[in-house]
Image (cartoon, rainbow, N blue to C red; front, side, top):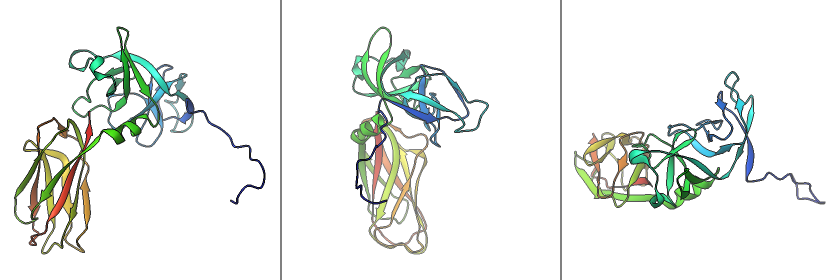
Length: 257
């Protein structure tokens, strides 16, 4: 394309409402709507692969169709959802913090030990329910402010030494990242991430010897056993057959509650 030489009738889409292609699902009007891992709209559920985007403005049944056959209108804004009970009951102390999806009309205080996706930001709590700010970008903006990092310096990638730090944050370890300061020899190295001595599921950083060089970056993406509390020990256990006393600088990335 080229620069304009006349006025352009540029179409506008309101931020408060959007039409989203649906997954093969039925969504009721007034329910929590999420995007699934492939970007299609589906009903809210206790599933960490979902990303909350708002409230369904209509009922649409695409359960007998293929993803994308139908679209649903989704509103962004502040909506009152049902509150959970017990340890997941949301109170006024949660105002300004994330809440999590328990089902397509209910929000909870916690992530359920990493089993629930975030719904949005709590803005008020009353006897009727929980008022939650929701939208496509709300959680991304919030997460950018709520992401924390705990560094761990690995003095050598030889042997089975353990290197530790203490977490000043509560939340979930979402990534373990490392960068090397030298070349590996003989074999590969691994760094096994643990919380209080318990291995994090899929929390092993693999560092390959072949073609290695200073500045190599590697990472692991935990899927479970990754809930951390303030004061918990975060550690990395060295493994593998590398024979070079190479230093690695690592960080635990924590999505704060």
